Image (tube, rainbow, N blue to C red; front, side):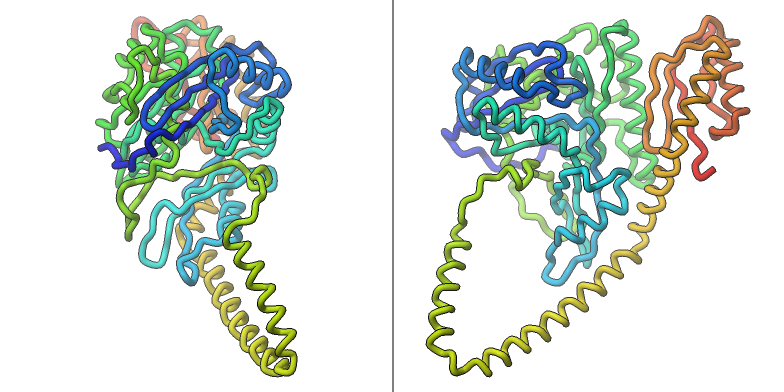
Length: 484
């Protein structure tokens, strides 16, 4: 079901910029209509691992693209990759007045997220409210990814007033309450699981697809998508992902007919073409500009008000406060005037200082009461069972990460010992997926038996389907034993 959205302001000009490791895509909208678009390829080394490694070269490319396309503007909405980013939905108790304080979110995030939050820019938004509790959507982005992109844009004379995660822009352009999104780019691909209009899972995975055949690409993408969907369903056994969930394929490589056709045949979810709520020319490759369109739709809030138990899609500006230009707000100007008036009155009424001291004491008493209430609320947060479950899960992940290097040594050494070639190794929160190839099924069987005997993985390890012709390549899911 589509989400109801408020319309864009008519005539408003919006310029969006999408940068990945191989290309830059620009798009301009006016109101609810796409007016211009353009793209340019990037040279190797300008963006590496989805991080801007050569800000000066990238800024030159952006300026050249704007000049040649006629898409000009000092303020743009830009995207950034979700590689190395983490997101969580945190349950929090309602504080007095229904407020969500930054300190409460930071404390909960630092206990649950499997990374050092000091090296992240944290952004969040309340996505659901209930009796005495709320759910907060929190995203942590590595600071070097944001800093490098902002430096490159400023070098091009561009002031990014909005930064948005690519996966969240994709969820916005799909505009569905429940959906699967597979965004395929030459250097990485994104998988987004949307439930209740909220991106519950967002994964960005780097890959070297140039070395793979079309069939290998399809198998890798389909397997990763299936594992992600299964992971969500295992975490929500009462409400698993509906097999009828629509699948949307976007990104630069979505324009490959052979890849799209084989993916649709391989995946069991019904495929739906992208139909964004904008007017656009027929020759616009919508699926390739999906991120840009999602950026242009930013600010189209749900048409219904949020009530008890309701969900609504997060709409977060990830531009850190340090990059916001400072200007006094109306409230600050009003406060300054109030301070001046107060000083004048205090000067005139200095004889009533005793009364002011009494009021100060009263304010101190009210502060102490509120502080005690906040401390009680913090204790309630720590005692909540859902948060404890999340902490246990985080400890499990931490234990697993501590042994991951040893797991890799066993996986690689046993593969060499038994003549098995490892094509790729993917590390999720509680599992390792290996893609292997061997000259015979016997070599694979001996390899998997050796992994079982190593004692590092849960047994039995799943075997490929036997029978003629014998399987000599494919994926295997390993579950490392944690805490050992």
